[in-house]
Length: 344
Image 1 (cartoon, one colour):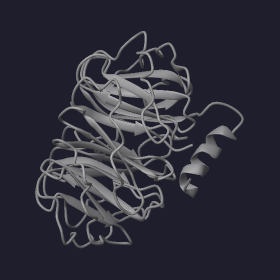
Image 2 (tube, rainbow, N blue to C red; image 1 turned 90 degrees about the horizontal axis):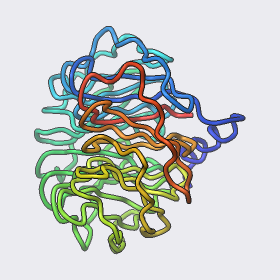
Image 3 (cartoon, rainbow, N blue to C red; image 1 turned 90 degrees about the vertical axis):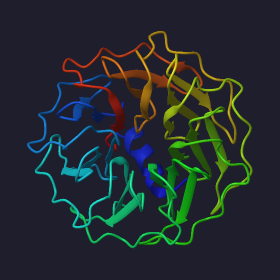
Image 4 (cartoon, one colour; image 1 turned 30 degrees about the horizontal axis):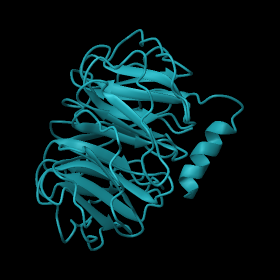
């Protein structure tokens, strides 16, 4: 397991009790992002940022690895907004000098916090910047661009690779990363079958999952500086488009937020899918757009299409969902698109 992931788990488990931190929800309708203290349930919502994102938080949100910054990808220029974070929003950082070229669909910090990437709708479809309490000069575009909309972006846990899920075949691009893009890796022998909607690495970097718009809706590959042979599909498929995919911090489970009831599926993971866990007794109320485990793996949050827009559950690997936590007293104001816990 890489150092960042290991420290994340140790930090949560070694703190003398359950994870406490913050839970961010990117959503449609102003203020486009809502953040809550988290301590085995929602606390009172933090005040909105003084400068809100300029449009729908369609690209979700991400904390920096040290938890000192919070980024939101959104639908209108400048397409990404980043704020200092310390139990509340600081003054928004200046926009990058070279903006992403269209709707921000995903944002991710590198594991060392030195870079930030945005997947977006218009060529070059992926933009990456140095990050040091503000945007540096945009890195040169990759020599082989995604050929259509960038929809999801993620770094490998060791920061050596950068993956982009995209709208057109081969639906996934992965590049070596070393303060800039390397030559794109070869496509997997078995491609995702349609639009790449979400991409996620396992915490040890040994597997790469791609959620896509056609059945089986989720494809997972061994990863070692290139794609291995696709794992067998789960015996119980997600119900439809998988808008969110997340591995648990210890890599023992994989969660998929999707359209159609039950809106979230979770599977044991050990170099392949186990039998799907039972559905939660209280389902999310509609299409799941984002899913995240807490850093200690003890909680699972789902952002979704209808009120209350975010639903969270206790989670126990090997057992599954606990009883749904009470809704936050102040709900997000619109469709929940993305959800993220702050680092431990």
